[in-house]
Length: 171
Image 1 (cartoon, helix red, strand yellow):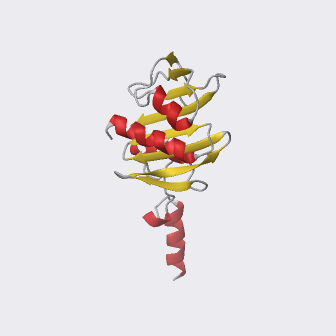
Image 2 (cartoon, rainbow, N blue to C red):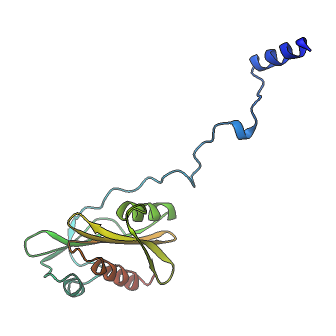
Image 3 (tube, helix red, strand yellow):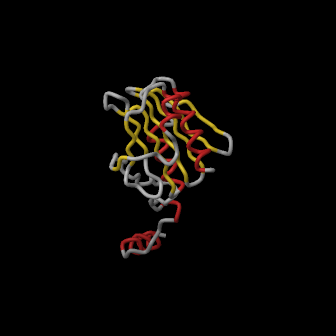
């Protein structure tokens, strides 16, 4: 009996695997690892927004639009709507790519832990909440995310801009 114990110790010392697969450390699989999120878009080009027009933003957000800028992201630029004093009043971001990144961007904008849950017709889900200087409404569906931030505290204004963006894109 003593020699069997010595033999087992000797085998273990020689590098014979004795762990079962459930005892081995688990590596992060792509489905559980947090996705790398793209950086926040920056305004780069003056011009119209392909998803929202100035009149809609003025009516919805309640402020005159003095300028519209878009990011250089193609084919879905982020739109920046400015008010008369030069401050941004509303930003519409559209992301189309990997589903995990779309969902990650929504969670970054309206974290599950703090935001109110949001659902829109057609299977869109995410969240909305007040943020410093305004509000955000963010939803995703499959590989697409639509995120709107506004300088207004009423989340309904951001929601309407999200709904209009989704409608304009035919999503």
